[in-house]
Image (cartoon, rainbow, N blue to C red; front, top):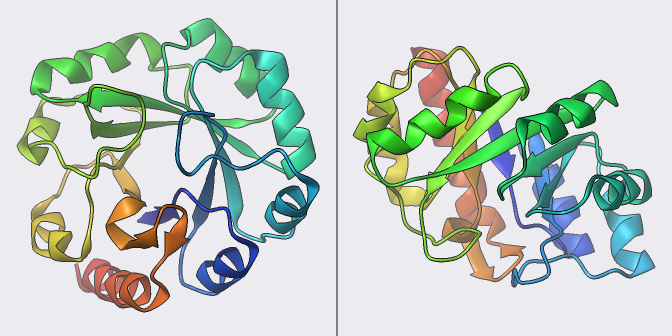
Length: 211
């Protein structure tokens, strides 16, 4: 079960999170996000040095912009949170990127939007529907996941925090490939609380190993 820590930016915080038992680290390139990575070389250097799988998070960005950012920041995975088409997702995959297509979920019917992307994304991300793009810090009713019958593996995001462990332990969807955590472990936007995050990861991983 993969763990992705998203919304990273600060060099020291990146290094600290990198030492934890995680798989992916997410970096947001959406200008309206309070966690957006500034277009400055010190930030690019800090991200390039990260040894975890680096995921760039975009919202309705053009292909050229995403590929430029991927080259500069050393991204191998692109996460698309807007209304990007299956054609664009497939084009990025053909260029060798791992593509994660995100969908905003409030109820089971929202999962049907993923059908058109079934063969054009490596993973889906099911996040909480809100009024704007990006995380709301709230979770949707995870019972809605029972309606997902697709073959594409998915990550679960949206409002995961330390108290989510009990509910996460009850999830047993065969296509669930991991979780995406962000604001539930922050002391400020883009700054993760290492102690809380490490404790959560250890408990989550131990539970997975015992299943």
